[in-house]
Length: 259
Length: 303
Image (cartoon, rainbow over all chains, first blue to last red; front, top):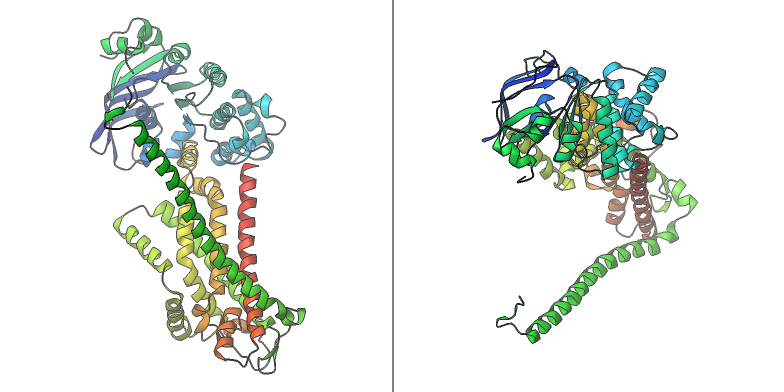
């Protein structure tokens, strides 16, 4: 069934997860354990449910009409779907980066300051400090330090916008970072920068990254989960998944025979 | 695999078809041009007539003095002032109510059966003739609420008239905010209210404010809603000041025009065209202000 390594502590535990969009079942009986402070990539053909899985973790799917979620999810020992669960605390703990860069139409500073201002009520010097730190961590500081208080986030290039979104997310200080195809709208150089960032973040954060780029998955991840038709086919060390997968369909997919 | 030769198609057939298609384009363009010319022509005709006939009446006296000689001489300052007062008050009433109503419809109401019914009702109200609002205002504000013919009743009537358009416009402006922004805000852990006030509303604001300014301006140019609620044509004695002003009716430009015409010949034609021109300029200035507000807000967003 599902392979899991037990060398590192588990921060996200999923058991028997079923997700339905109306009549259609998007995720079928998913069970998985995500290791702390490691990078896990989610791969699989389009429509296989990997994005749905990601968005179930920080409850971004709540907004979809007619969605039904069954099963048990534990994130750092808490059930995000428990009655009375604190949605804002969940998202403070679990940050997200989207496929298309989506900075707010305001200055770079205001973009990054939004999270810490709303969550922690920071202002003035403390806020400045957090903003600068986040911009540095997102490797954007050197490019924007001269005009980040004045320049609108929308006036950055696509790659810079995505790093701005990463900085905005980091400024809230999440433990877990979800990335939904973070490079698919970026050029190769920007992609390389984001990949480098993922490597740097993995020491202190747990990262889940959805990607269609198999080389990228192999490059950046410690663990890989292969989804197909809403099922989690195989999940384990990336090395094993890419060189010696257990399942035939995983083998076919990672060798480029379909998808 | 050439298709010529198949299905009985010859090179000559294709040429003929090409020619016909090209001619079709030219013809179509001609129609478009003609229709545009007609529309533009009407606008030019209206503007031209009002300008040519109205400009001779304009003078500092005309703009700053009250009417004299039994309304046949003097200026139209009380009418201008009255229109500005009606417009300002309408704007003040309609801004919070219309905008908050639109926000509720867009963000909180959902899409249940009752909400769809309300939305349909608001849409129909937006298309309801102004005179209906005038009668409604008379019956409810003037008679039932005992406000009498007064500025207050006029504000409420004009606000009622402008509200549906503003609610719908606000709702649309909010729905035009990209879903990706809302998602970003939620994923960042902003609450619903914070998402609305920090991200969604600032983005929608230019569209919202433009709608509010335009519809209050439009409302203030309407004669029928104030016909029975706030308009007075002739005032004997001095105009009231302070709060007393709100309890009394007021002269205003559209009503002055309508009455002036009905007086048939007693008022010099020049005066009527002059009033016409002033009203038009007033509405133009407001529209221009709305365009400026929108342009500036847009610029700020992308600067």
